[in-house]
Image 1: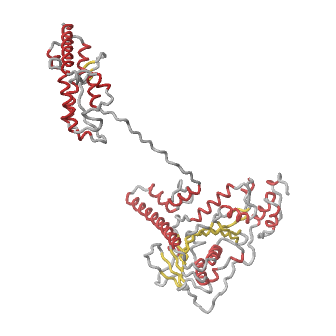
Image 2 (image 1 turned 135 degrees about the vertical axis):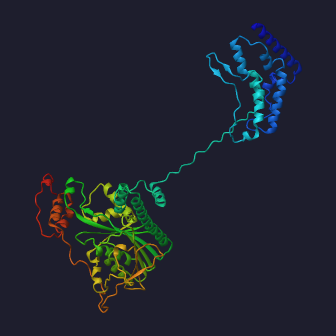
Image 3 (image 1 turned 90 degrees about the vertical axis):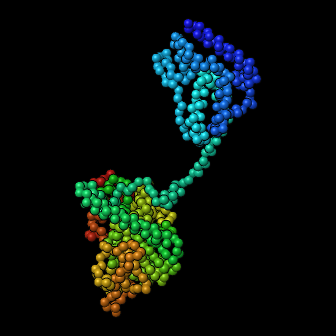
Length: 548
């Protein structure tokens, strides 16, 4: 029964194929010349160029070809109407070719073929082919019932074009040096990491309190206070940036920032004994020009002068008095250290500059927020420290620090201060000026609240100040005119009349290090004045060192 069924099926197929050959001898879709015709261009559709008209054309071609290749007697209905074949393999193969559910030889059931929703593509095919068209093409395609026929129809419906490759050219990388990187980083105001030291005390206290508090209201108040403190610090930095732009765009304005570097030890040696001895301290006050980015470094050691307000003011006085007559407005920025920068001695010094300089008419001294006092001077000091760590030799005399600073950058100008260049501005407050504790409105004047001091040539003896850096805040006035205007000091008195002394223990430590110092500098250390002269004593650390 099975053999007669498939014999009849084959016979019907042969009849249909002969019928096809007789009826379509010239347009036979299975004709070999169709495959080998190199000039053949499908008339229906091409890949990703489908339109509604081409879809309808494709449907007509498929249906017309189906009517030629598959006769009404040899189709799905013929197979279903006949008795079910017992040959399991042939049945599954037939179902597979018809896109129906079939069972593999491993007893695995594969579901019937279904249409899928067209995905989005750059040719927008899902908008050009409707769902009904897709269903109709799907049914016609699987009714072919033969793998080779399906391949043939797909081949006739696809127009293959060569792929256009667009090669991207590799960008030409231009090598730049370290200086260019530093310039870009400065312009973008970025850095590699946050500083781990010299943090703001108030920020750390508020941060600790926020982390440890459990009450929501208190936590909100602390966060608001912390945000206000940060905003105030950022606003001060922004004001400094604006003033720097003003100095760059106006030739009569100068913007400076100044700060004292950490004490520099002299001598600076690499021997382990050096870390246990008291050195001679050398001081460096850096005044940075915001316009030219040059730095003036004023250095001296502790035998010449101290590092108080008079000493800092003397260096600033020397810097401002050297300004050309084209400068009429000077803006100064510093931290809020009361012992060095924010005090009456510095105010007296600025009054002297206004009085004695021929062209400077206005001086603004602005203070950054405590804990947020990063200045350009700090970058200068960091470069000096880096130079110190990387140097191969040693520092044996204070003058060596001047050479090292000058060698750090061509933009650093070193001024070695003499003792007669340090003036006593505090003496002016006793005769030329009278310091008062209340302003013109009767309010109490407190240095800790001052953020901005202004000195004008048109208002001698009147200090103007603000408790904020905001331009819209009104200036207050503090009158420091002398009570007895008849007395006046025309010449600035100097602060020191002789060299300062060091402690006897420091003198002993310096003499102990003489074997490690060049003999040319021995007399310098031996003649340093001390509280009480001492003799060189034997030191156990120096037993293995030969004197030269």
